Image (tube, rainbow, N blue to C red; front, side, top):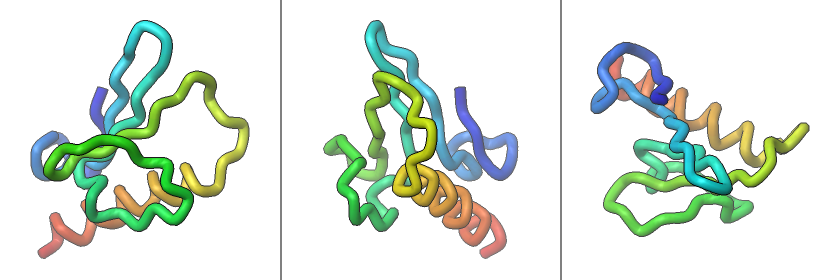
Length: 80
């Protein structure tokens, strides 16, 4: 499942959910461009990064900040 600022996944997608057998990956299409001081992001792709979730955190400011930053980045990119 993909979420973003418009219907086009490749240009307007911000985050995605990928279901695995024992966890969920919360992915970031342009994760390499995000500031991640808590070092939550994993992956080695050219742009993609993800956070592996085994349980949904009740309140995780660092994760919320990453999600907000991903959407902000896409909004700015789409306007340009």
